[in-house]
Length: 428
Image (cartoon, rainbow, N blue to C red):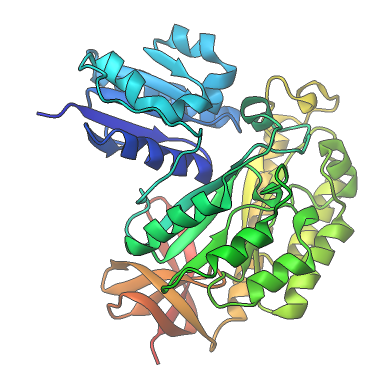
């Protein structure tokens, strides 16, 4: 009987991709995701916020209580920066990011089942053939590292500032494999994919053009980008084919130039607006999602108002709102004028309110318009999926694959603990 390994994932899409890659390297075991009974647990950690670290510690204690004879391995960004803390917590192994490619060796050693035949990655790159997202969407990691020096960010301390791009031929082969295995949407992800190819003289546009030569019915969606990495060449590649999602997650963080300077972001609002205008001059419905940090050190009420105004002006499809989290080792942690917790919470709620209004207005513009929806699941008799603008649809009836569907009105639906505004759509 195979021993069981359960993988828990915290944080970003790159971590989700790397969890899938580790699962595929552990095929000699019965691998599960997020199951609280197992012989061994792999916690793929995140250090973006203190809340992510707190949740990992909480899960660790619960798993240890439920499985006193099991082994727990912590791997990833949090373990890179807090190894001793995790060892004191009781981790049986604390591994860095690079160890994900050798996870089978460590698991085999801890389970004492022999390491004969265990192969290590020779090129340092992880690859996948499937996805923990289901049978429709898959993540594909193409890059690691970031050249930015944002004052609030702890990820660069864990992942490093050296850009490491997966070679184009390797990305293409992995992409082809996912398409051949039935995946219809591939999300290209990394720490900062705008820097893809930086160290080799290549670029993201070159990669996208090469992937566009792959036959089949599929769609590419890009992971998070910074506005200073958006130019006409990239937009022309995106808009030259129906195979590219007309959506970008464009990181904002704040609508105030003063706060952006405190954050050491590499753009001002005029640059952000220029990137948005460029895209929407080519397609007026081009959608944007973003991140906003509420309560950054030194943020004043007028900075918040500027951010709220920016959200209304740009018309985001979705805004991920984060209360500023003081991260050890970052420049922002020692800044003066730290914002008190209650005020951060209040400001985050105001940003969330503005984001909800922005979403409703953006979605309303799509009523009566036909888009191509990729059905991901059947829920209560409806086909549920996303279109090329990353708009969620609930289509009356049961369909599969890509479906041309017309939005007729907006509806609020609850998925788990979260309620989300959908387009109610019909196939014409």
